[in-house]
Image (tube, rainbow, N blue to C red):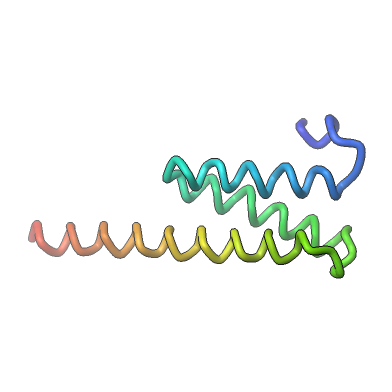
Length: 83
């Protein structure tokens, strides 16, 4: 639905990247990952790879994955300490 609002794939990719970063800032890493991953897929399929935005998308994807893994690790530690 949102994709129709944008005139090209590049603009939509940037939107998804920033949307994912916004969700990461409120610690919702699952949704953040979904949006940034979709941005990276759009980039991979449609946008040329010599744009600087590719670095931004993949950097954000890596940051979100690391935070997501840290969150999972903390949950596992809490679960182990409750046993």
